Length: 217
Ligand SMILES: [Zn+2]
Image 1 (tube, rainbow, N blue to C red):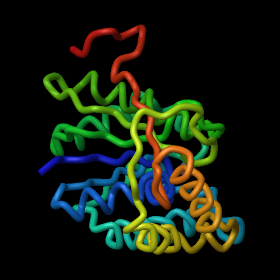
Image 2 (image 1 turned 180 degrees about the horizontal axis):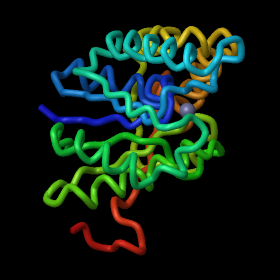
Image 3 (image 1 turned 30 degrees about the vertical axis):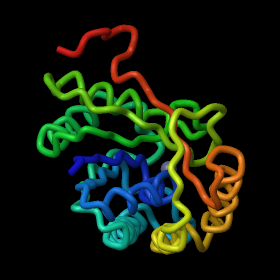
Image 4 (image 1 turned 135 degrees about the horizontal axis):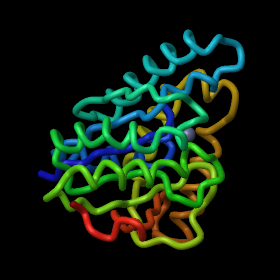
């Protein structure tokens, strides 16, 4: 059994970026825990932020159940401002990583156009500096901005229907933007160009240490 942690800056990133891969993990008995850095409270045009955050947390719980995740944590850092909370979010994530002891961490790739998605890697690196002895592999997923190159391909054909169901659990988001159609298209493209299969998710690796902190303490 592999312990897996998925880091999602907002509810829906987990299902969009690696929902199929999560289902493959949970289908073979791996433990997958999802950590939401923000609750995406600015992401529902028709609702004030407090209501939107609570609604999106309910949607995230529903998606996590449909992905058979072992559990979720909501860190509730401010949507749109994660880059101002790298160390705080890193410390909060470190407590979860210390408890879950993941061999694998999934997170958004660092070249995504959304600033909160770019903050995922520095937050994970900050957390790992506080987790001496843990050496998880980092695999980065695509959300808004497609990856230019990839390291790993996962054939998600047999779970693609369930992945789309998980994306649709984020009803407030899918009602504003057809993520389900967009991601079916992206994963179809990846299947043809990277996976020699019908639907695929692709991942890049990331170094767990940055230049200023070459060694984990
Ligand atoms: Zn996001």
